[in-house]
Image (cartoon, rainbow, N blue to C red; front, side, top):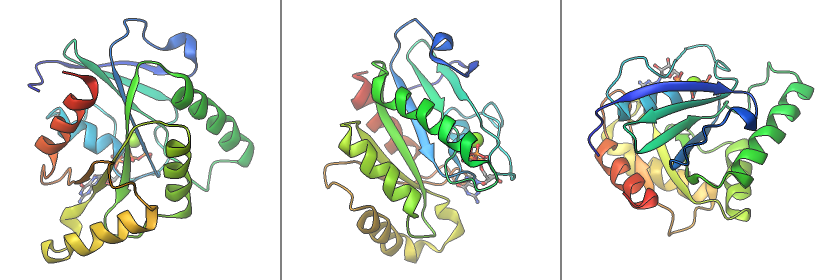
Length: 195
Ligand code: GTP
Ligand code: MG
């Protein structure tokens, strides 16, 4: 897909704020600070349209970005951020669950995992929950530039095995820094939105 236009639309705090134009949506799920917003920026060739931060827990709403008139990226709040209170976490958990389970426009979840480390308990729980609820998932293992290329395949295998990943789910090695995996991810996205 050629990105001609990318625009921030809204930080939605509830379903009444979701767009009503029925474009397909792709949601990004992952731990705080894993690189969700950076991945969006890389996919659309913009430095800082999706706000990134070295401070985890920055994204606290469903942030909608419209790409051309073709689709939305929905940047979800990161999970596993300890400094958010338990009540707050539960509230957000319910909100995100309702979105992931009930949003008809949602075509694919990009589950973002740090390639350097085995997936956490939170990552495993998220993946299992998505599979259990029949939500299509593409695993994207990012920050590949932070480890030597010779170790990529070994780490990719650990990520897949620790998640217990379904062989049919697409898996993409990614680096927002290098642009690695960008074209491959676009072609997966196009497939899922029927572009
Ligand atoms: P929250 O919104 O807090 O959940 O974080 P996020 O998942 O959106 O992470 P974000 O994109 O803000 O990135 C967090 C930090 O990781 C930033 O300092 C980024 O520059 C860095 N980062 C993200 N992706 C990559 C990558 O592929 N390579 C390298 N080297 N750094 C990355
Ligand atoms: Mg973010």
